[in-house]
Length: 473
Image (cartoon, rainbow, N blue to C red):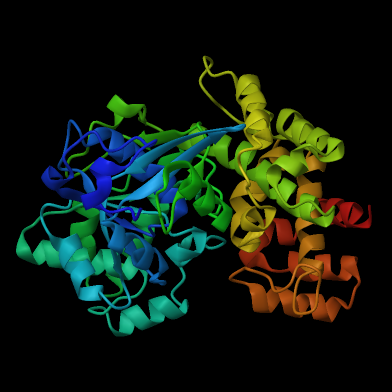
């Protein structure tokens, strides 16, 4: 049976929304309505709507129409399949009303964002979507999307351009600001998105930039839930279990965490009522998650693929990789973290290992491996910087960096891992060709790229020597 609002009452073996969807009004626009958002933020909001029906979500895809094509005929409904071992709990999500496709529905999206009813614009656009030069801590003004948006600011294609144009309309109409809530794995993601939109606005209109700086808040947040890419096998399982034909169900784990800085300029849902941690400072939690979970994931992805593994559960079952992850977290990452005394980092570490082991999560290593040039700084390199500053060891961490370089060495046309899925693909694949099979030569070339390693690590003899030593191993 096709999944639609009209068919909800007849569906079996599935949990349906416990609220009247017709009574829901949209208070959130979410840019980047991919699998993670639908498995994480949209699920928290779904828990809220019975008590607060004014916080529904309008989703927006900034590039592809695939999500809209799948979900709009389903009235925004989709299945959330929570897998733990061999058991699966299936629940229908109703928090998403519709999905707009920015390239073809730009004006509709901007009108929606400019509507006074919208109080929050949230984002999961991945690191590259911010058009952010991390090495220089500034807007990448040479990014093609930014160049285009500065030339045609009323027809934006980038996330910063869309946000600033919507805020301009709200300033001029008197609708007031909205909160910009980043839900991406970026260090200080709130500060980054605030910096980017203010810098972008300054290039267009100093008055607009000043209004944004004075009125718009950008709280930092930390998100955590493993959401693998959906497969045809997942769709088939759903069909056989419930008779539901869902074009894009979501698979996830039971664990979920969301920590948000409590700084909303236009109001917010009662996030704390559904388990969200509202705090004054997200930074300690953000560092913990980025370094322990995401850093370990990146190592498992590159080292696991090099050893022929396909999924996270397979990689963590490899004794060599498991031992490395445990030692990396315990000896090198945990000493860099500063959590409240009541927080048990050892228990968190052990819980991460259990999550990695979950056989119900077919989490492909290739999914984690993508965009390595963007992910390494916050997942591994910043931890190494902290270790170097305090003369602490970082042998396991730098082996993870070496694993990425070895992975890159086997990427490209005709190579074992195929073309790199990375914003720096052309540059890195050119480095591979120039190195001509010499790993140390490749490491030297990649290390010189300050947009990844920054001037400090690129020019550090200690870091260079330690990396080349691991490359040899």
